[in-house]
Length: 427
Image (cartoon, rainbow, N blue to C red; front, side, top):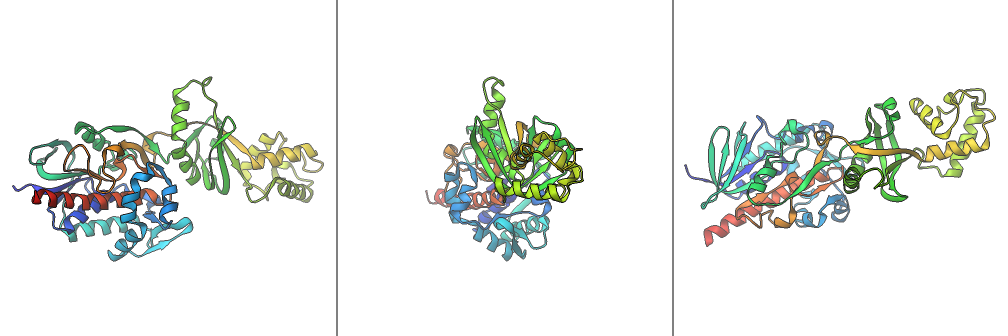
């Protein structure tokens, strides 16, 4: 059998984009996927709604990139969020923009995006083979030999788009890292990114399921601010989660690694500060509290705070302020009013660790970008080898930016493969 021009391993967003791009330009492309269907992880993104990109301009988008933003600049410039949106809509999926520039299908169904990408592959002429667990990628004089549990294939080029190690039940087992390493590439240690945080305090467990909107958060260590943001968070049985917490986890990864590698004596703890009333300054909030205390003077403090806070959160804040929840609101000393104001403006939690990588949304780390051409996603070490998506050491915060990375690098890899093949034929 004549070898394929391109074999793409992994039918996620980056793999399908790369495959369709190469096939649309006349290459004979085989897309191998270990699962029985394409896009299993894509189908659960955005809580099943698929936040596929963000309308932020290029500069603002780069600010959301956590690891190696300069590397992604070239592919992002050539295949922007506008290009992604136009292409998806050309495949029959109307899109909508929501708060923060987040882009979703109008149907709110991630499967519509998956189906559109599969449709794009098929109409471009991609041969798709599912249930193919690749076990080996070997360089040969003619190109590559790819072995699966069922059979083997030959190809002139290979695109590794196997994803990272987060959500392993969707097929992200880390095989791509093994294959890249076996072919001579350097791996940056992989960790869970956009992952919930574990706290030393146990009181978040009493609030499990409680979501807070429009809070301001800061993370400090030795008085130095490491991270700050505004948005939504969630209390869990182990600590905290939600958009601002997930973003914090990715930004704080270097500090968390140092903290976990050192003893308690060697490193100061990281403190997660929650401002429950960011719209009010200290003085304004204090006056607001005073009005509520006068309004509910005959009630216990536990009930006098219900206009200000969710009921379940009140005991926590009162304890932080050192106030008996059963005492009457009437006659609360000025010092305690100030303590209550301070607790509302700065409710602290001590960060202990992250949850396991199996609970992470994305993977940080991966194949070193120093060994990849940022314009074509071609390996600088192995001729004919290309990379795309989460496998590469590039990641971003929440908001559709990680899927944009997948689409941009997939497009670059698909175009890069075609250019490589044309050059080979001319030489």
